[in-house]
Image (cartoon, rainbow, N blue to C red; front, top):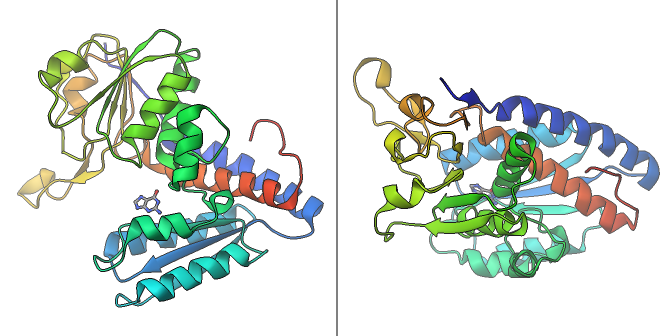
Amino acid sequence: MAADRIDGKAFAEKLRARVGEQAAKFEQAAGRKAGLAVVLVGEDPASQVYVRSKGKAVLAANMNGFEHRLAEDTSQEDLLALVEALNADDAVDGILVQLPLPAHLDDQAVIAAIDPDKDVDGFHIANAGRLAVGQTGFVPCTPLGCMMLLADRLGDLSGMEAVVIGRSNIVGKPMAQLLLDANATVTIAHSRTKDLAGVVRRADIVVAAVGRAEMVKADWLKPGATVIDVGINRLPAGEGEERGRLVGDVDYGPASEVASAITPVPGGVGPMTIAVLLRNTLVAAYNHAGLDQPEGL
Ligand code: GUN
């Protein structure tokens, strides 16, 4: 039987609508809109697309967007000065510096300069540390979005076997922390893992975040597993239908014959990232304004 398709797009739309309503209430209570500053350095085409869609989403959610586009050859000093100015700006609740930065800039130093209370990406080591020890802080948007989909689908994850494929600071590591926090038994697999297929086959929950097109095969999955595919890969330009198609890290068609539920690409995890960014920004705004967060944000 074919797996259920986990509709991240629909879930994200509902979350965005809810955040938008609550942002309107924030404006009434605080006397100002919540504000997100987005910093883009250089001309990376994919980053330009992301930044544009973040800007539109912020406005649609009744928040202010402050976009800062800097030249490719911006110095580290100038970028740090902008981050400092945004830290000090009371109209700014959240700061996002779009990654990757041009090679001459030190992304870790830039992230470290962001006020952790405005770090809506959850990339600052203060927030990574809070997540690691179970304190409240900002959690990176993509893994938090994956957790929302899993909780919606499965409810209590206690005792489930979860395998996260990929160990990035942005997805793999925080994803594993969140699953652990939800009492799953967690394995992080990566490029040096021996018998990856065998490891994945133990999993009730598979989160694939490696960035390799259709790497996870149907016969790696335990029948009935729930599969979250974080990958967004464009197939190389070829002939016919395959040409330039977007695919995930999981071989979707065959995998959906084995899994019980699976996120599609596109339309699965992708739309969750911006929705959670809006949610994190509103949380930052409530904290910044010294107001109690509404229930269920
Ligand atoms: N580049 C790709 N994804 C992200 C993200 O979630 N946040 C930032 N800042 N940069 C990114």
